[in-house]
Amino acid sequence: MKQKIIFLLCLFLLIQSASGYQPIPIIGYYFEYAEDVNVHLGDDTDPSLTPSAPDTISYTESFSMYGELKRQQVRLVLTVVNVLPDGAKEEEQYDDLVYINGNYIGKLNDLVKGTEQDYDPQQVELIFSSDLIHKGENTLTVTAGANPDHSNYDDFVIASIYMEQYGGLKHWLFSYISPNTVILLMIGLLIILAGSGYYLNRNQKLPFSTNWCLHAYWEP
Image 1 (cartoon, rainbow, N blue to C red):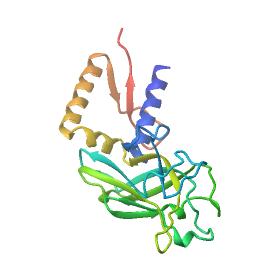
Image 2: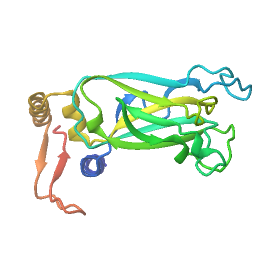
Image 3: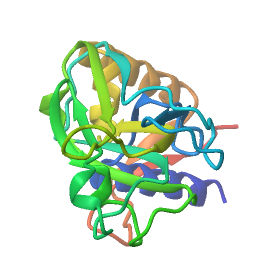
Image 4: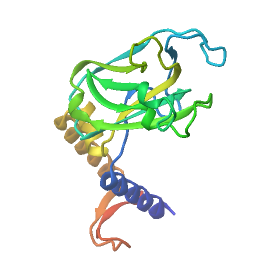
């Protein structure tokens, strides 16, 4: 039983290291608990929206990075309500745009479903290069689209924001801990395991390409 548990643990770590996509939160704790915003972009009061009164025509969220991003892609997820969809009759007049540090990354109208505005929350996803984010203060900006003479703006709500960078286990560790610290921790762990009767069995045959795994035997 003990060997099976250790085998499954090794297999899990191998899959994690190979497949990658360990999220590193930037905004929001994790996806199910994104950062609540509930900001109304636009210029008209709409009782069906929460909040009903408009807050602004351009919303900016600031966030700080304490190190450089080590992967190529960043994923941004916005929960929006009542964005005018692509293909709607007046869509070409109202472009609700998204920027990272002033760099355009996408248009909300292209990402929402349907052909008419409705009040059902939708999650839209934008993937962009990590080169747009730098160490220190950064900004995420969403603007409400307007008609040609700017006499009317699209009215919609951003309910929540979540943003993460993609990275494997190694990249996740090195984003928060220096490589030398990781090496020292690994050496310490091996010493503890050796003192407790743990060892590496390189002759163990496994049902995948690697021919060794960490096995544990507690010496009585």
